[in-house]
Image (cartoon, rainbow, N blue to C red):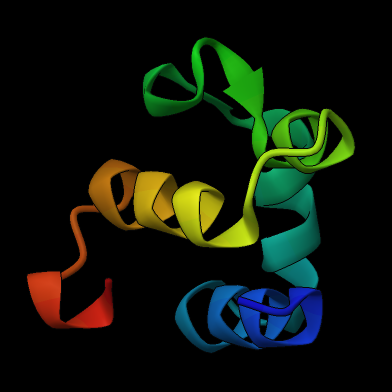
Length: 64
């Protein structure tokens, strides 16, 4: 997944202003205790990070 696709999905589900805040502030156990921003900065695949967000937000499986 491209970063632009990742951020579009984040903004679709969280809103344009809250998506960045969520990515910066929320630690996800699915990302080994990192935030979305930390995981992406560490080189995690955007698809894996998105799937972790889907789990954390309890979004329907169709959004994976």
